[in-house]
Length: 409
Image 1 (cartoon, rainbow, N blue to C red):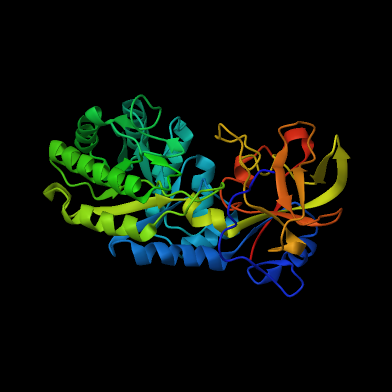
Image 2 (image 1 turned 90 degrees about the vertical axis):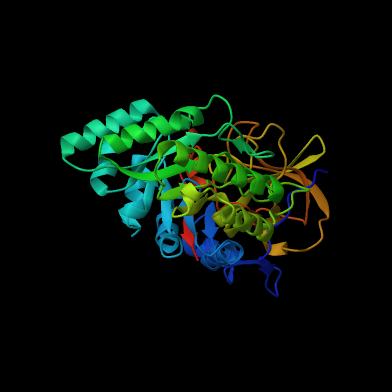
């Protein structure tokens, strides 16, 4: 038997033992959607997550949503009223952000390899472009000149440090992301000399960290770096985007980030910041931490079989919707995500099973030898931590299976 990760707080069962999400029974949600697999996102949990962050952080901090975590349109429209900005990473995400009701002035566009038509769309809309290289800056300035518009440009900095313990390191050493810290000030001066509207710095060292002290130290280094760069430039950055970094507990033994500790340390860091940053605003860019725990993936068992003494629950879902949960999205050693039998939520396990998907590949495994209550054909399996990097980060067209349904409750 292999353990699974901790089920996020906030979920419960009704008197029949059926998992409820946002106050609705899981089976009723699946019936209303018309079919499974189904992603369900709980809007009340999203709002509570945002409120938790605001209560813990310094009052003048801005919160940006990194919509790569989950770009589902109804979720974006809901989120637009809760946060201070959206961070996008493609022309498609830019269009989705603007369609959600978020003002273009509160949208920033990061990511290497922006095409000319994407730069043009961002400049025309009035979104901020986080420049990833000198070449990208030259292209953006040329496009803006041709359009007769003043571009809003920030410089994304590749810091000379990374976020210790992060699951995905975005800074430190050679990276495709951002301008090396040693070259950033010179690029900002060139942007200013060209007459662009310089919007500040974007400094992202890493993501999916659970250690509050490591996050706090990275933020301290980030603010110090922004101060040094501002001194070199001789101008105050209007905004310093500190990136994100706060992770969620996916696996056995993982513990949630101490958000209060992060906020208290950040308040101390900002109070001691360089005078060149006195009038700067600061933002954190979060995606996974805001939405991962608010989502559940429901998939129905279509077969129960035994092979060489091992019981398999075969579902209508799989890695084509939940690539990360299958262990094929950035993890070196496969470990089990939080998982449950929806109609027996909270009940003691009585058997060890492997939950697999419907694809013809041994990689399609959602639960590897996990202890669960008895489940049969027709029952729903609930996979948690499904609100981030699920539907949009998985190969939905693999083997012609198609996309899962999604709903916001």
